Length: 439
Image (cartoon, rainbow, N blue to C red; front, side, top):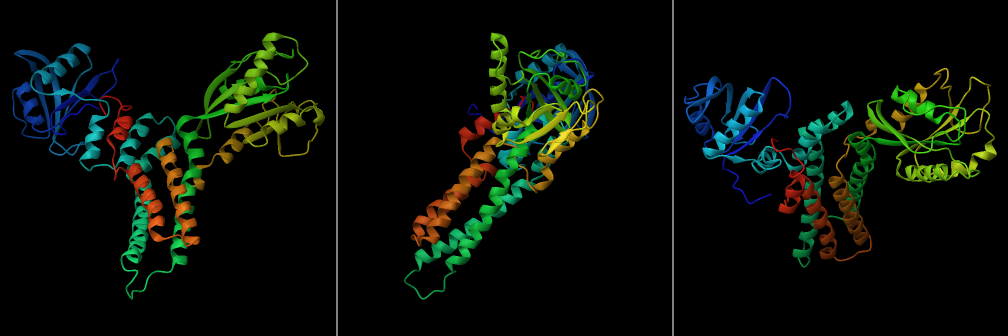
């Protein structure tokens, strides 16, 4: 971000462009109320005022002006609701700029809210996540983070680490004095407990990332087992061609839908087989392996007539990745296989809900009191965990306290980077540049 003052008057359109009844223009900064008053040619005696907005002496629109002595940015703020005409919007913006305001940079309103103490950095990032949320779970996670639940957990851990650091510092400063110090075994146990809390947060990123960005699911299996029929069922449309001819699907076919509150990105793949000389089908199979590598969940489909000897190698490919095993075409015969299989019929639409239930069971956010969904927070937490594990090992090995302190201070610093208690301009620029202009 450019080196702008935190108090100069900024302005931006706060609502999306396009068709609609009204638009809202947001203004913030010292004396911004007085600036808007000069454009409507009247004083605001109450918080909400209906008035005329002028450009020079020309009437631009009848607007509703809402004033805040301490608004979203913890400064004077004004919101101007006008008719959603590009002509009107541009004339209001240019008039405000001609009278001393400037266009806001990306995320500058929220950045000011952070700098002025309304939010910590983690809560500020949650504002963008709340705007972008497209499911109830994504909304709930962002809202909980914006309310400060995650921040409070981290601040509590950071305070515990500061107290541990103080006790170890006391030993260094008064090592020659007759002072009773805390037993290192208790410090080790306390650090062990904090590591456990941090690891729980790190583990939650798997579900948090899925809820925020969607779940890539590869549907794989031999040719003609019903993969395309399964995709079409989930998407509720005939996206993929369904045929009794093996090898119909030559390329990846994708589609999105919500299952159990999770945005799922299904990928229908070419059938896994080796006995083909068709160059296009071979290329499709290669893309299947690529999709398999990128997927966070695999649905492996066989049909009821399959021979276990023919799919054991495929199962070996997915054993280390979350997967769901599906037997299709049970309308043809009743047959069971060893393992945890879901038995369905895409033709009769039988038991297909069991797949959705399994997805919800695998990616269940209820297992975590705090869900991490931001990759920056995830990476910082991994660093914190490594620092504390190093500190724990040093204490166990009776390494001098000043060496232990290095790792504990690093852990404290990286927690501060998440919440913004320790801020870095480059980090702030990277975060807020991804916000929309009016936020």
